[in-house]
Length: 95
Image (cartoon, rainbow, N blue to C red; front, side, top):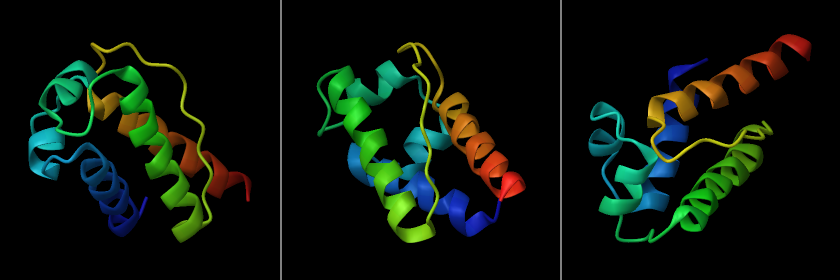
């Protein structure tokens, strides 16, 4: 996946969470840790909305649709990012 697209996903989600990209992704936070540190998120619904907003931006800006499976709150954000990348890669390969 091009770095610009990867960076776009990371930056979009970080903006939705209200946290620096480096804090979320370099620290490879769990989803629960993101909720705990985020000034915009208080529960898992807020977290899902943050990912949904990122997915909507991805669709608008890059024409890519993603549907994320469920993740537990102890999942690392890198696992979620990998799931997005896999979906984008599969769409590109099929298209």
